[in-house]
Image 1 (tube, rainbow, N blue to C red):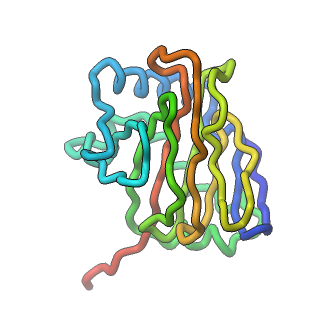
Image 2: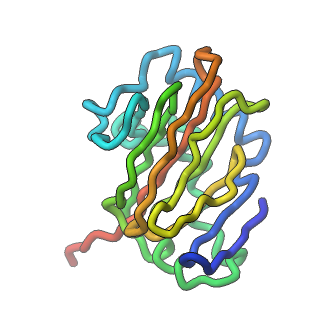
Length: 196
């Protein structure tokens, strides 16, 4: 795992090789099972109106009975255990101070894109994932108002403030085989009042 702290154009973190090779085996098995079981749904069912031709699944709803059945949810919990590895903790403190999150998996097919938007959370965590060799063009996470496109690889993760306007550029691919394009795993982190 390689953690990079970037202060421009806004404070954010990029983590390369977030999942280990063993964790990735579990995660690819889970993603493949979503395709086999037709678990991915369109934006009408995911509440994702700004996307085009993209499929998605809200893991918290899919595993509402037992979150422990999801390798993605289980392996993603290490996002909350990085404090000693983060150089500038000003932003990461919001992650540590959170008490609720929502995890969403997207699959970008040919001609998919996501218009620029802000997220409804405090912190956004986006992991990009695809099978090598890469078989698509475009599909880049970008921050249009900052004229910034972070350099993300497969199994790279970015943590940034949810109020930053961001989107995904149009993706094109020649191979329409299931699972041959780009995935993103997004975790939206917030804090809700707790009654005492």
